[in-house]
Length: 286
Image 1 (cartoon, rainbow, N blue to C red):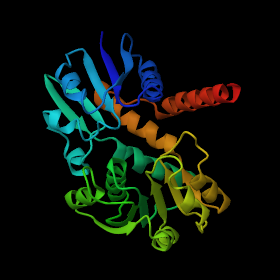
Image 2: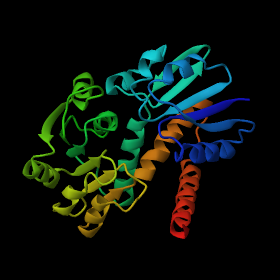
Image 3: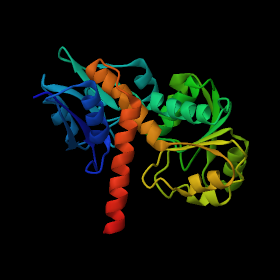
Image 4: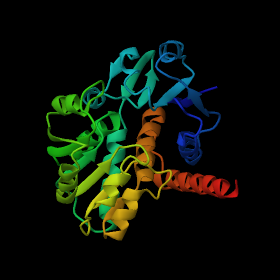
């Protein structure tokens, strides 16, 4: 049986199976299986080494986005520059790595601006400095920005956005998260804020934000959707780019890589929204 999977840890609540299965059904692909497979840095080499011809591809999430790279035969130049792989596609015995988070982020921002009739932002602040922040930096390049500000607790270590900026050939201004005044100033001046922080980490910033009308926010946290950042933007007349859109667009690009066919993004979005609503109802009932 042909199969694909999302790998990472923890993985049990991943929404990737819902989105990919919806895309396959819309494309008329039958007899394939999409799995959730728990993998961490220690188990990953053995797992990747054992992949056979029946595997159509892998969606890769944390903590495997950097760890998988040395295990691959080829890496797309964009993924190499970003320093993170979120998609693995076997082809004729060759394991190739790609990064579709970049297109997911850029597409989510474009869609939000298009819906609101706003021109694309020309300046940005990224919150966080790891793999998703590096993808966000590359996405800003796709949106026409070559300089941006990054606020984080620290900037060193593997997968650093600083190293990604060097490889991408873009400039960043580094602001330490502990410097509240500097972070707040950067947030006021940016046309777009992309938060790659875990749920709750950006709450203190949300409390002191002075949101400008039509300023754009993309918070990659989509469950819970109603984050403090989102509430601040909605109250201040800002534009919210959906974290769910980022998820759907990056998954759509993965489906294209794994199947060679373009799925209907609206079908995938509908399946995701339905599943999120189902989980929300279950949570209220428990």
